[in-house]
Structures are given as C-alpha cells and as structure tokens.
Amino acid sequence: MPELPEVETVRRGLAPVLEGRTLTKVVLRRPDLRFPLPPHFAESLEGARVETLARRAKYLVAELDTGVRWIAHLGMTGRFSVIGANTAQPGAFYYAAPPDPAHTHIIIETDAGIRLEYNDPRRFGYMDALPPGAFDAHPFFKDLGPEPLSPAFNAAQLAAALKGKKTPIKAALLDQRVVAGLGNIYVCEALFRAGVSPKRPAGRVAPARLAGLVDAIRAVLEEAIEAGGSSLRDYAAADGALGYFQHRFSVYDRAGTPCPRPGCAGAVRRIPQGGRSSFYCPACQR
Ligand code: ZN
Image (cartoon, rainbow, N blue to C red; front, side, top):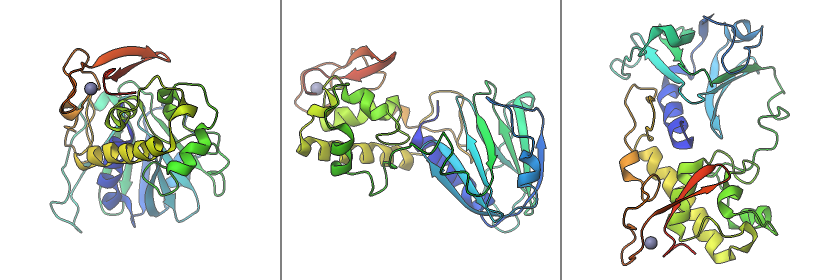
C-alpha cells in the first residue's frame, strides 16, 4: 500500500504534467472505484484548469480554477501513467504504459496532449470532485491532524495531542487526528530511530523524547521521499519508475535480524498491535 512518501513522489511526478493545464477530456470506464464516482465527476473536471496539485495525508488534492477540488487516493494498487508527448518539456516524462489496460478505469487528457491513465487492479482507490467550499467540512478531511512535514507538527502539538493517552504510542501515531498520513512502515521506522518502544503508553513519552520523535518522523519521511518512495506491491511512481526504498528499512519486516543500531546487541522483533505488525528492538527501544 502506498504510504505518504509514495503519494508525495506521485504528486511531484504529476505536478508538472497537471499544473497550469486545462483538463480537456475525462473518460470513466466504470462507475465506481472503492465508492461510486459522483455523477458530476467528468463534467466537474472537463474544461477546468489545474491551479495546484497538493497533498493532504495520503490524498492528492488538485485545486481547479472553478473552485472544485479533484481528490484522488491510490488505495492499495492505484497508479497513474503519463502517456503522450509533452511539447513544452520534451523528454521530461517517462511514457509509461499501464501494466494491464483492463484495469485502467479513468482516463484524463490535458490541453498539452498528455493522457493520464488511472490503473487500479484491486479498486481500493478513491476519486471525487468536491464543489467549492466542501473540502474543509468533508468527513475524510475535517478531523485530520497536521501534516508531519509542516511546522504545525511539532513537540508541543504532539504533547497536547497525546496528553493522558494510555494507548500505545504506535497506535497513537497511526491515529490520523494526531498526525495525518502516517502508516505502519514509517511509524515503525521512526519509533526505532527515536529509541521509543511501540508499546510505551502515548501519554508517557517524556517531552524531550517527543521532540526526538518528531525529528525522527520527519527524517524517515524525507529520506523516503528522497529515495523516490518505497515499493512493497505492484506500485510505480507517476513517472513509471519503481520505488526502491524498501531495502533500506531498519526494522520494518526484518524480524529476527540483528538490530542495526551501532553498539546494540538486540534483535528485531515482530509483535501484533491493533491488528497490524510492529517491528522493533526490545533492547534499545524503551
Ligand atoms: Zn537495538
């Protein structure tokens, strides 16, 4: 499943394709993805110009000049392929063809002659076209916490959000109201880097350690974005390049291997937490 760094990688790949361009044609090859597409979806996008392509948590959010926001979430297996010549920036894009055209569900063309194909074999993805003013009140967005890479996410905010919480810090960091967009992989990695046990009650992480945790969360996300995002499934970045970060995980999916922290003689352990696997080193994460 794509996590925040992969979505950010896709955003960076798609932004030069979409920003400033008018969407000339929208073809839906089926009426739904994870949810039914709204009946006005194609009409809301066609003829509109994309002002910016942003990201909120793991959602791509295109702000259109009509005030409509075009939302896309990649679900488990969603990906965009960019196809066609770009006369403005020759050679700027990798012209990836979708792996299996039978799973191409939505096709969007721009006035630059680019065709964007959304391909999603398992169809857990989501798209919507929200009318002007509807974004902030939408149930998917209204309760989201701060973006982890923004200044709004910091030790003071995190301390306030976790105050008195007895749930494990691992579960608290996956709570999208505490911080937006973090998933299992990067929470495991950040807790390892900060030396915090995933089992520690969230309200009992000392302030100085919370500051270290904030830094660790930012660092693991930024390094993953830098590396082009990870690829654990049949997933490719918008430019067609497969991600390649997974071999650099310190603890995620590495149960039984020696702890990579210098001087630590422990081994990585896998434990179930909230229906998912946590990976950590019991010797150096407290
Ligand atoms: Zn260790």
